[in-house]
Amino acid sequence: MNVFIELGYLGAALSFILGLKLMSSPKRAQTGILVAAIGMFLAISCTLIAVYSFEVPSVNVLIIISALILGIWGGQRMAVQVEMTAMPQLVSLFNATGGGCAMLLGLIEMHTWESVVLSQGTAYQLLLLIGSLTGAIAFTGSIVAYLKLAGKIKDVHQTTYTILARVFIVIIFGSCLLFYLGFIPISISVFTYSVIGLSFVYGVLFVLPIGGADMPVVISLLNAITGIATALAGFMQENKAMIAGGIFVGAAGLLLTLLMCKAMNRSLVNVLAGHFNKTTNPGEDTPQTIQETSVAETITQLSFAQKIGVIPGYGMAIAQAQHECYQLQKVLEAQDKSIDYIIHPVAGRMPGHMNVLLAEAKIDYDYLKEMDSVNTLMETYDMLLVIGANDVVNPAAETNTASPIYGMPIIKAYQSKKIIVMKRGMSTGYAGIQNELFEKENCRLLFGDAKKSLQEIVSQMKMMN
Figure (cartoon, helix red, strand yellow):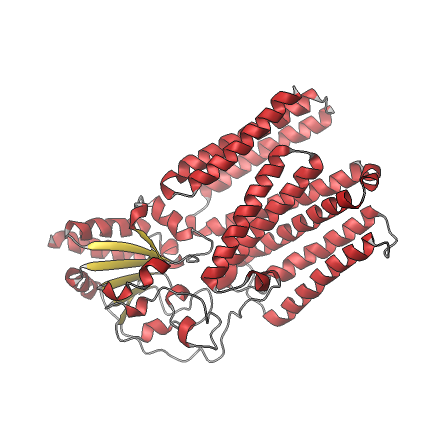
């Protein structure tokens, strides 16, 4: 029976690998998710077979089955009901459950086999301890990220919390070193609980001062931490599927974090140290001189333009205007015009947020252009429609050394011939600063709900054909 279980876990691991490979392409992402889900089903089935084979107590079996039913029911309801605008919050919440689970597995392992843990030596004890504390950091850090993304926690002053976070991380790793050198004469169970308590606090202090513009980096990093915690828990449980799944999540999360760091002009060392830019910029409250436009003028500009770019942002997600973008695309293509969707790596609230939104509207991936491949050609665009994007097109990142986003690579929208920005009002973006693009001579602002504005534009352009 053990052979079949091990083969099942191997099959699950291969499914995870294939699923990740397929998800690297938006065209095959749905198939990849299905393949990975089949792998997870296989892993759960093998675990249930193992429970039956090893004659686990009936109470434990009941707890396992109840947890499975609750998890399936809760996960299905949340996934179906969540709005695309709230997807980052859901990802953070799910990530918190993964970190918390890894932490609990470490504690259970310690309580169940404390005498064995002590006899295994330093390496096994460190494995248990690191798995528990990384799980605790991922748990509280992801909870705070969820609350910040949901707008339930406001940004706080950075310096104090950043310093405290650094103090706590030094205390955590310093105490671990002193404990295993024999300078802290307490039991491993008491020490583990103490370190987990410190890790809880560190997770909060680490994420709390981070501003909105940096949240995609943090989400990627927290995913990586959860993957590491899961892999370590898998080593403790000798569970091949957990080891493989944790390694995949940890590696993918770390690679994505590095890509996000590059897109945000951050170093990974600064991310780990909690060194993020402030979310406010003194002197940014002065009134801006802007030029407004109307739907009629926008239609006129679109009629004369030949090469058009659309820059989507979180505002498009709020307005749910992605389907209207697709309708506009069809109208423009019927007039033999070209259209591209220019995507900033960290547009939205999590990596890939805009790609998911546009895919939901069935916009072909070939129309999506990465920032780096378009910036050198920006002057060739006759017109850009900036729909809900703010910080990712803000020239302050290149010109204002006092700006919290200074140094962040941006889409160089200001270099195009004409720009129309669709906004509800003059509120700032998630970074909390004014957008210098709005004051450019070639920029016009179209105020109103982006979805309604696009519907009106599409409707009138269809009548003109």
